[in-house]
Length: 308
Image (cartoon, rainbow, N blue to C red; front, side):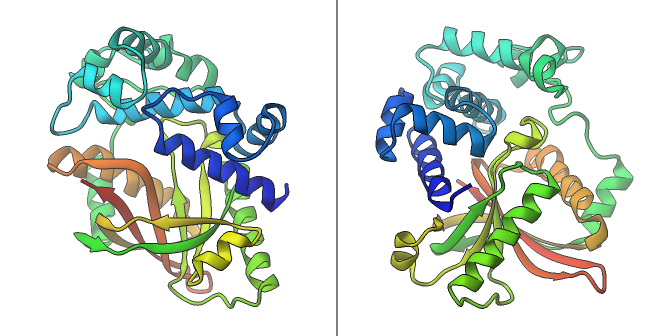
């Protein structure tokens, strides 16, 4: 896949996420990235593993799923408007068809209901329920293990940071992640940019408990100083926006990194945020790779989650 096509899909996704509350057509977005509708549809699906209209609908529903759990309790009408639905009735119908339960049941954590009647389970095999939002939670012992590996957790203010990025074309699958990093290393070498400690990161856009693995968006990222030069090159660029972030510094075994990071995220979503007044923006999660030491089986990462 050409990096130029990745750039166009990257820009299209950014446009969708920035305009998620507005009506969006494939013709409009294709025009934004200077492609015909046919060509745009073809390359979008080949890179994201789902058709454009399905992507937009899924992102709206997943955003609504999280918004309904916010501490400040927006109304269902407010959620439907903020997620780009034409009416609360259309939103409720689409939400139940996809997740298998209503927005009200989700908000109230109604027991005895699961997602087996929804598209999320029938098509993708993802089973959730209002009472156990992320398909269960950690045991007390597992939670204690996660907390024992947390070095630091605090809300910090960060300035803009610019990155060049290359996305996985296999979502969160380890093969896709490794491929994204192989392409990043090749791109940096081609432009004589050395890989330095503390500059590698990843942008993770999707909740692994809600989104099929191959449709999750993972972008390998590397800090770049000359953002204007990067924009003119054959690579995608993304800015970590200035603002308040929940910063969680975490260390574990490199050989168990994928499993340990999943448990960390489950603890954050089902335990930490459930007991705090922080509201997540749900744009993306950033993983800053402070140290990856395969020889000594250690990884050291900082997770950044933008909060209001």
